[in-house]
Length: 355
Image (cartoon, rainbow, N blue to C red; front, side):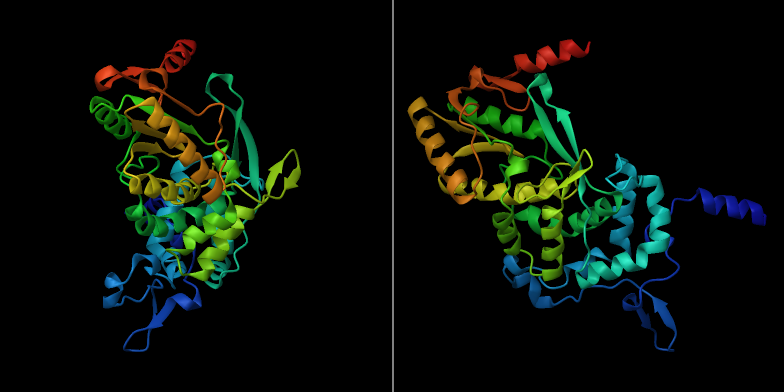
């Protein structure tokens, strides 16, 4: 192949995060036995005894080194490109991210490793809810912040996800809404024809930062990671040219948001399991299946107290209910006597509107 052909081949080949950089940061270099400098990822030290330690302190101190490993950053970069998405408040597009990395990549890694990384405000976007029932607040981070969040997610998810309840189905690898519906069918077929349908009021906007960070601290000992995630939670919200500071909430729109939501609501899952309840939760949509109306009323009252007192979340009393399963919907469906599945009327109406 001639020189021009080789050049065209190189230009057509997708590049990763580290391929944007001429060399790694000084912290990520070593020397071989002959004294030659070798480019290498910063790798977390492995201790044979770590597998026997309590998972609450698993991989505690050096998670940011894992975040900054070349393979992890390359995966995160590829995912951000594949997800596309709108620009954040700074206007940078995903197509411009590679050029930014060439200039600022070394500094980015340094600030991640020393814990000084400062996220930018998110761009507030209001999207209509299905059926015209109000709007939902989204927070669109900058593409650089999305890259950092994605890199952190890839390290945190293998640590946190295995600790989550088997009754949690939302935003988890290998789990789906279909699986949640199948499990709900089993509960109804088994004689639990009454559902406690709990509606959390603006859940993603009302997450208590202190409680969430305390839950994260149970599993993460890397203070740098905790500081950076805390800054992500507190990053301002840009709307109509005005930056509004946030004291609560984890706006939907960033890669970390679903994992952090599941982490917080796992406390609810564990409480329901401790009480022996049969339930399915998909993100903030939680249904508990019981055998009588009276039992359901007791469960709704006690679970509401738990959510509001322990997790500082708000239960929407107007939308929450105890009722026969046929009268409620779950993930766009309704359960029928005997555990059969049907399409919820609201979902059918929306489908007709789209035709």
